[in-house]
Length: 122
Image (cartoon, rainbow, N blue to C red):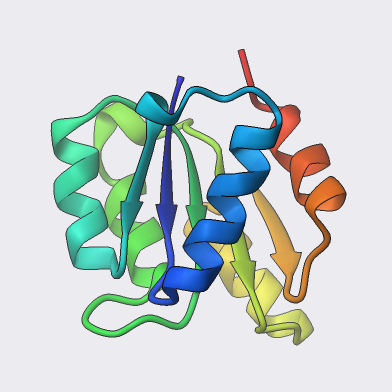
């Protein structure tokens, strides 16, 4: 199963990647993007099984990314976990309306993120 980690912060991408590596996910199944535009390109080239998406990014933010991905037939039902500092109730509602499967507010502990991710691993 391929994972796409989308965050403009290299530190956050590394943290998320390390959580996956710590749980025996093979590094060859991990892809990274620093914004939504790059992520869309990667998603079209690879068969992604789960997306970890930040909300606030340059060029194409996480919410718009989710809307674009959900419009692609191969990703209609793919799990998307939004990991963001946007904690207001209306943000959560907007994200779920756009097609986010799960929502996590930063800062996040590794065990909590893994609990969210592990629900979708096949």
